[in-house]
Image 1 (tube, rainbow, N blue to C red):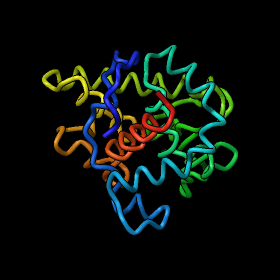
Image 2: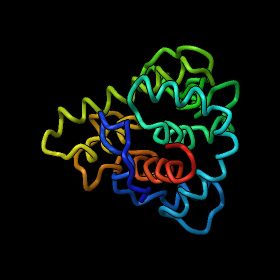
Image 3: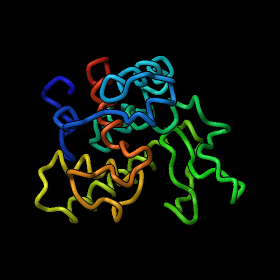
Image 4: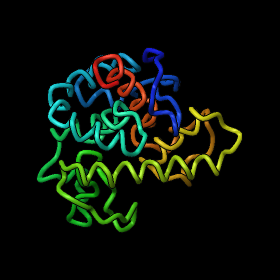
Amino acid sequence: MGSTFSSPYSTYGDIAKVSANGASKETAKQDKLGYHGVSASQTMAETDRERMEKYRTIIYRVAKDKDIHPALIAGIISRESRAGHTLIDGGGDWDSKRGAYNGFGLMQVDVNPNGGNHTAIGEWDSEVHLRQATNILIGHIQTIRNKFPGWCTEQKLKGGIAAYNMGPRNVHSYDRVDENTTGGDYSNDVVARAQWYIDNGFN
């Protein structure tokens, strides 16, 4: 877990205090890693670090404005697009049936009409895009807060991260928060990557 520190980004919980199991074997295979878990998430976050620096300024502007930790935005960018490395003209997750990409931008806003059905805003690597995606994340966190009032703040934050991937209706319990997410590990992987970024300059 990331270092404990006094974070100004506390409205939605402290990402450094969220428990995380890290990447699944399926996710770790993206980088042909022979291991999984937190160490795999850390390795993948480190691989994306140099590319992530290109977006540091806009990440921090959005983070400050939305009161979301910059390391969490970085963690999602790492997971969703490998800091833009896996995208083609800003698109990702090609849907052969639709003949179109399901995701748009660094944080892969879901533009599938049968999925999130969002209309992409801004250029794929722009601050405008990050603001849109972060607003979507915040909306999911707030929905999870209402859905699970008994969860602690950090549990709700983790649930909101899972919901960013698969929608709030697919989050049923905290113990199995990732059961319906891509790779079965989305929030656990994003949190572990975010905590690595906290320990390595995004704080």
